Image (cartoon, rainbow, N blue to C red; front, side, top):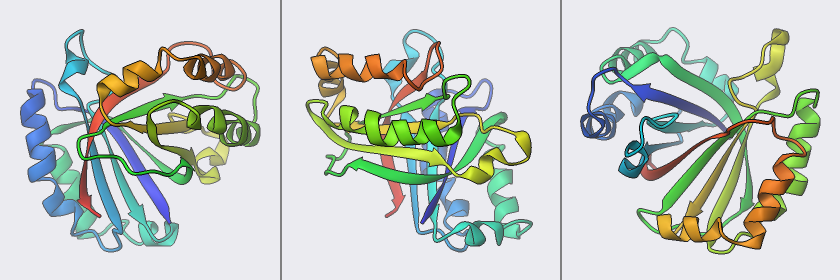
Length: 223
C-alpha cells in the first residue's frame, strides 16, 4: 500500500470555517470517484492555530492506493480532472504539494474520535543521505518518540525514492504523524524528559531551523 500525502493552504480570502466545510462535505464527492482509492483521510488544522496568525498549512489529505501503478493509471483521466477543478474552488493550488510515501507505524494504538493529531514536516540535515536520514529517523528517533507519555499512535511517512529522482528533492524529507487524546495531553507530553530526548536527537538528523508543525482533527472519509 502506498499513500499520496498532500498539504496546502486555502484559497485567498476564504474563511477557515467555509474552507473546512467545503473540503469535508463537498470535495469527497469527486475524490471518492477516483478508481483504486483504498482509504481517504482529511486532517483539518485546528482553530486554535489561527489565533496568532496563519499556520504553515490549513490541513493535509491522505489517500491510499494498492501500489504506484494504480496511481499512475489515473493520469489524464476525467476523474482526476474533476478533482483538480474542484480543488481550485477552495485551495490555493500554488501552495499545494504532494508526496508519495511509505508509512512506517512506530507505535500502533487506538486514537479516540476527535483526537489531537500532530503533523510535523522535516528536512534532513545538510550533507546527510536520504538512506541515512530515513534509517536514523525510523530506528533511532522512532523509539524515542514512541516512549512519549500519553502518545496513542505514531506513524512516519517516508517519501519514496522516486521523489528524489533526476536530482530533485521533495518539499519535505519526512512527515511525522502523532496522535494524543486531546491538545492538553499533547501539551503535557512536551513538558516531559522523554520529549527533551526527542528534541535533542533531532539535531542528529534534522536540518537546523524551524520545523513546520500543525495540530489537526482527523476526518476519515473512506475507511
